[in-house]
Image (cartoon, rainbow, N blue to C red):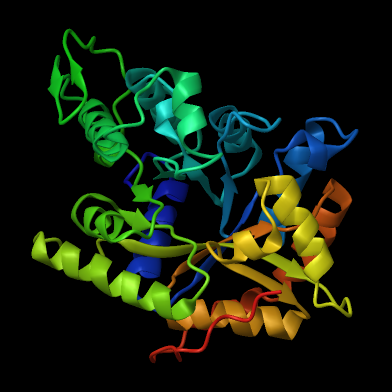
Length: 352
């Protein structure tokens, strides 16, 4: 993390560096911001969940971003979490910059970085074809074409604004701005680290060249390893130092002793959260379900493939179930943090 005026920021920087370069593994959890998960609980329930995760020893809290389901807006949620926590990293998994004006987003993110004492990590994405892609661009009045160039431009603009150099104007591949006022908050160290979510070959190359971390969700650990190799090769070709890109993983997790291995529960989760069948979701996203020892073993294969920050989305419907799963997942933290060197096998991850 970036240097800041607080001890927390320095600790965060050291922790994140270790995750990228050494064998330490960090584990975080997605905050259940959907109103369907909250049920009749009030906003204090989200703060209780965050406090419980921090107390149980998780390293980070994450929020996702959409206009297509009823949930607390991502940056609003992070602003609320900043004073309610004091140790965990706070991140987006992932933020869709297309939903916001770029200069306004830079100010909001810089504000959260300030309020959290330098604990922010910003993962961004451009969306993908289907429900979670083009409809969001149409709602935002932004062209779907050249979306990846627009995303890279937005991040480059943020970094210029966070630097405190007051660029005045910006010329990117897509974005072109003049008369930018010198009002955006500067951030020590140039702002929070910005990670990219995505696994396409072009995304891997762009991650290595331009971004501070990689947060994909491949169903197969072997694909994670080959993707990470390409990210690291791209970073080296761009002259970046080893460890410049934090390797992370987004994964949906359910700990269960159900006779079907959690298949029905995960099927309900896929339909409610993504509008997809279980078969369709597990073809594109990492899903892990089963008894605790099986979940630990399967997550461990991603760790052994090089992942150093596991971002876990709990695949449970309601807030009581989220709390139960949070406690059960916390019981796996010691095992998950023990990184082992070596190459992963080529066997497919056993999902439900």
